[in-house]
Image (cartoon, rainbow, N blue to C red; front, side, top):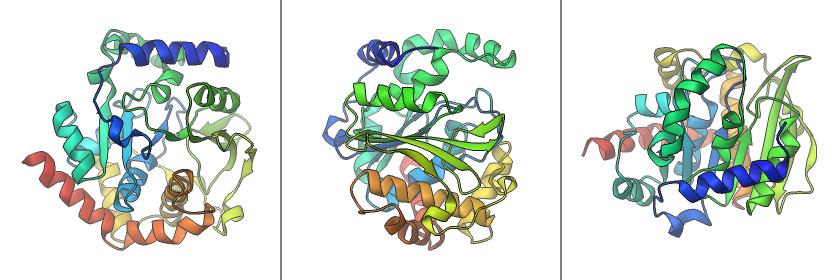
Length: 299
């Protein structure tokens, strides 16, 4: 496997060649909520809703991602389904940050080199093979947000990615892997899994396991986090916002958003942010954010 130094060097090379979205004015406050994908766990796009909760809380979010490579519905697919224009030019995206509080950088638009690699990645994924590109995506956000919550498909990668975030001067980062069973896991922090977490930047001393009970939440069955194709995930989003979503999914979104509030210094402890995150998700703020997003990209 790649070493921390190699990962950081790869990431620096891709960052240097990336199209600059010119969002430096927001980078020091901003966060990315991102997963490597490649876990084959079939989970719902948790990060996409976490982005909307955090934007509703006033935290600038710069999400960097792609369409599903190994999943039926990647974060780009769901956010596009909710109204985000993946082809929006950089000046429109700068306005999105100012007006909506979040932006989605569609990886192929910012990393020309990745365009050529896409078909190869799909072919490798079909054979069950991963490459360094699974791992690199989360490290090469063109907006360079100072805070990162990063989910990874395998436990062995947790310390390496935390080390890479450190080497890339992340202000505060957390890398997480959710253990489902002896041979299965998810690239998310969830209330259904034992979560291996490692900090970066000012949180580099964190190296532990977190479970739902550490935050006063109930352990959920993993089935409550399952997603599907775009139609399924849009219906699930609607159910969650209407208060009809699976409890485990709602609590997992709230937990991740609380971690985002904590990483960006909005709350002193993760558990201090859970109630506020849940209220934004279920109380209409996220629904209003989606409506504003649709309006913004239609204009």
